[in-house]
Image 1: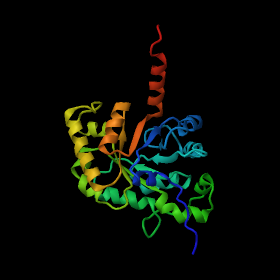
Image 2: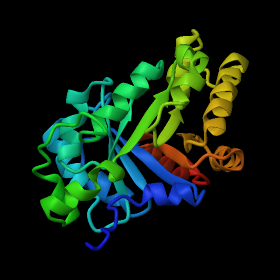
Image 3: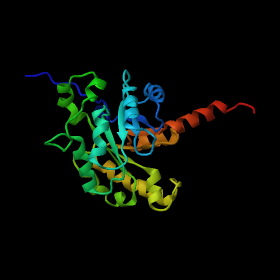
Image 4: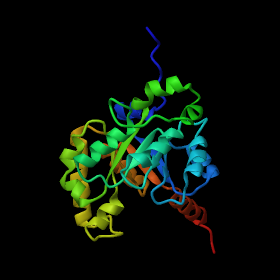
Length: 257
């Protein structure tokens, strides 16, 4: 009997143990920024949706997490298999799919991450094994289970369809996107609006009821602690630029100017 290989991705085990994990979204095309953040974070999402990052730079940023426990993921611009393919093939161990509205969207996302017969991912991980220091055969042996399907619930339609979305097999974590959720009901920039909060509560209930790990963004330690109390397991502490802003503001605190 062949020896069972150790999965490359530790996040799923953390979530099975109900241990919260902490990450950030990298929007700045910078290897150095990722190297710094990866020292402290459980995961980093390289932003290919809104950030000015091309695939060559994304590859370098994914490689920059090497030598740390930080797991690199990638956020793509649309729920399309061809957009998910290259980030996985250069070493990302998961894809964050935006704007999942219904079960068909969720099924499409799940299938784009796994090789046949479990999915429809095309073969070509030429660079991923080098990032993880394994052979091509060993990468392929655990690839389906290593890959994280992270869907984003960020539209009122998704909240209305939350039960059918969360019944989709193969979703590894569902995150609530407060900004777009607020925008979808004409409350742009108002995540604390009562109507937005009501939608968030409905989304939380549907995700938690499904047993799938839940994720979201925290704007403060107090908010992060409250989210942990409610069962959140994947908490984004901010974007790289917002973490810089907060760090600079903290450096000025107490200085007389």
